[in-house]
Image (cartoon, rainbow, N blue to C red; front, side, top):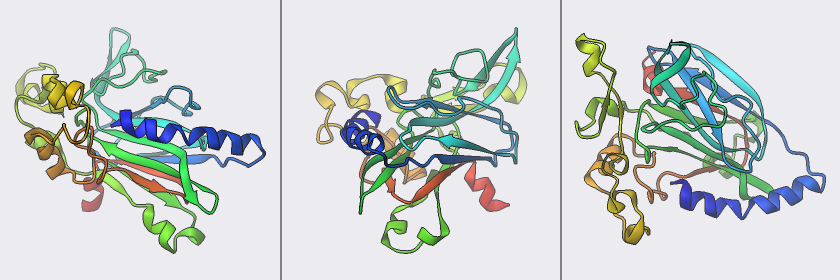
Length: 275
């Protein structure tokens, strides 16, 4: 998804730089992380090249816990994801799902190994009308799925009315796709004996599993009219209609907001709804 989405966003960045360099104040954002999963999740962040760094690149979030990360610059762009089934062994930290390979809780500029559910952001990426700059955000399963995720913009109360606020929609992949993952896409837990060995900890995308140009929308399939949804991406879309299911799934999966003061990222949001 990032390939076309980012190209479209980047041309706006020069305008944003001119605005901030001419004296316009850039307001920092706060990202609020919540874990409603029954196990600890280790959120991680990777910043896009040439953009300001995220204040942290990895931390632990026990079941039921919340953590707020302040100081996210108004021009930040990147992705956030959750790692799970993590442990420390031989002096190295590792995760069976979403691991960034640094051997530490902090990812330090490394991305997560797919499959992983991504929450993607470009803050201040485009014109929002009346001089405002809109944020763009989405939840993506293009690199597969590992944990349910919800992204909700947080708004100032005085700005929550009107058409602009209506654009600031929550988006999510709330379903546990691991439960319905086809065997040919399934990533299973390390062999620890017993039932744990059979547990599905992530679900690959068809591109990741098979690597063909057709499934990856590249080569002669690198355009929306040549790369149609596959049976696998349709399965992902049926489970999570708001999330990206393959590379050209833009129409129903990209969201924008010009009034946000921050974003709330919830892991296992369906579990929260039951509480």
